[in-house]
Length: 175
Image (cartoon, rainbow, N blue to C red; front, side):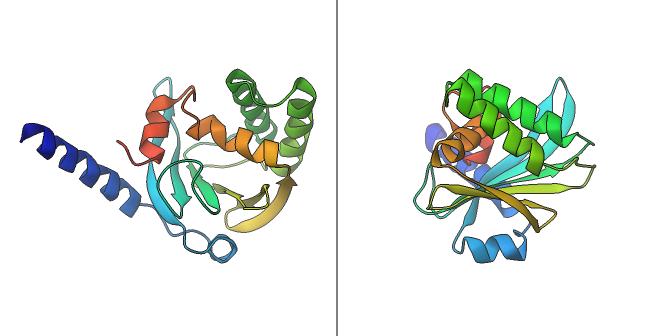
């Protein structure tokens, strides 16, 4: 009985977190209809609040069927090139791509990712064709059309080997 109550409480918490997800920007919602927030939460680094994030998909799990998205709401100012650099470092830790691919991906991300300010929102959408489309505060900012990149990029947060397993569990609605 206690285990059942604990499972119900965990499911309720995950549902409550997903319910707090702000609606996706209209262009994102049109691009990938049928997505629902699966989970979300706060990412911190050494006690500093970095961003709130939500994982959107048509079904639970990763990778799910159909398109999926990661929607990040920043709590602090960050340099776009540094976000790209950190992304490449995390992709490398997970073992995705070759050194040449990661260099190419890093260059492209640095071109696309703007500097963010507190309150800004970056949304990445993985589409069925393997492309990732990015949005800054709801406006499209570009695309990286490489299925290897799409898997590697979202793996930063969603792969079982993610360096932030705690945040992964929140995004997948398990915490």
